[in-house]
Length: 113
Image: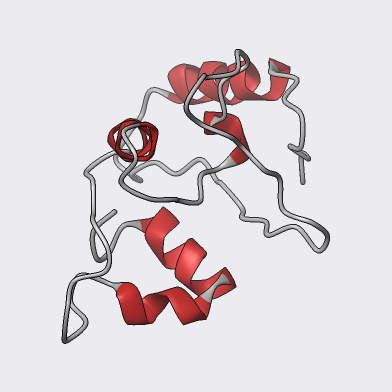
């Protein structure tokens, strides 16, 4: 993912040694960037390399050409929050979205509040 993408920043925070392979690094290009996690997973499936993906993007069904390996503890974590503009007045819509997210029972996800 390109510069400024939050997941890219999270991966580089956990694995700072990968920053030297970034596309904006000098020298021979040792990395490729995609515009979405799905694109990157297809790049891996076609043999272009390896990547780090969030647990929620790992498919339930195994793929023939891709192997997913979980991190060993301590496992990297990130916080995801719901944000809206102050001028947005459809509070019922916000509450419905919040309740839908809370209703999801996802492995590896812990509700903080």
